[in-house]
Length: 181
Image (cartoon, rainbow, N blue to C red; front, top):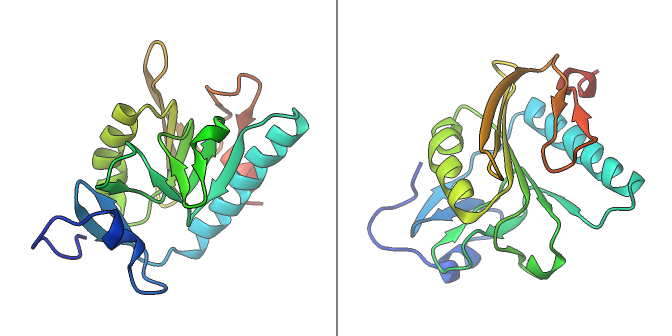
């Protein structure tokens, strides 16, 4: 839900929000972020840990950042998002404020208030910014929608009980139901 439509907001407005107020800046509009449900946080922790542990086991250089973590998708003044999980493999994109440019992999965990943004607005923004892989995890429906934007673009829907192949890491599969036990 937009905070206000009266004027175009910028990075300065985003970074000067009152302490504790979370929002995303998309095309000059601020969108308030509701506190997440417990299942959201369980998924955030387990997915982040699974991905981090995989990267460490491979001695990889990619970094995993769970929300809140600021991402300036297009390195412009009017779009800062806070994906639930950001995986960044190019350390040159990292700054003290967060990520400057598109992460390699983004995971959004849907809540009732974020559904429209995650499935439409962010899908478009992430794809056009150069995100390589995007997952939308829906805990209420127990479905994961995956998008691969490199090479031949691909989109698939999976259930929590399915083994999901991660496109950016060829030998990583995730079964979400195993993470919630």
